[in-house]
Length: 334
Image 1 (cartoon, one colour):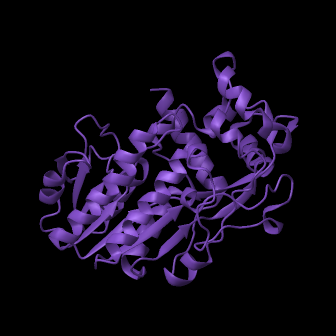
Image 2: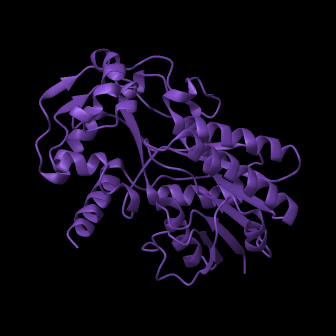
Image 3: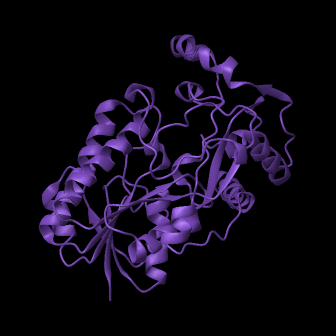
């Protein structure tokens, strides 16, 4: 029986991954903090290990006898500060990788993000996805770190991984896009799906996004374990949608009308600096920091995952949002 350690095991991706691994006959060791919400794994026959990424001795003990490590833990949230991102995402990743090398783990699958790829070279505004620039695995960080702490920390974590790969550790990197589906435990209040349903989205922004179902992301991690090449990154992304297309799908799912107002990125972007000082006066539907990227099409090319990982994407963006909406609605009503 293959033994797997999952860090971030109580998170959206980590929890779904634990479920899939158990279903496939793996022995799973779930690494999480004592304060973690266990909702997603409470009914699974996993071995719990309590600790955090800053405790190398506990990590070492957790990895004893483990064949593969899935490192999904990271700091989330726009409001998190530099110290938090550095300690958890960057130094935490370094600690996991160094420990795995010392213990002799055969393979590590690291959950990064398309955020580590930076931003497209130009805003797409109203240009459809198929005619807009699409980022791929060769794209690299191109943003001032202070403008996007989350993305920068994910990029820096990948740099830590490349250092340890050079020392001999077998690590494969996955870069999911915007992951959607049932079980998004920590985004019940700030999900755009929830905001749309609660009519807190008064306008349609230009630009767009890529949506991938949580089940396809889990399949991508398992495929990376089986077929991924050491030191390589693989984008896990499915449908590129303009926000207008996304809101149209959400309207069908939620029966909430699509906003009539179209907000161009070229109008929104200059408001970032004043809004940072005045944010307490406004109830904005999106974090102020993200307005800096208004009008950009965060579109991604998934060809490498299709070819190298033999991955098939089974779930549409519409199905992903439907599953997420059903889950959010059921859990908010409890």
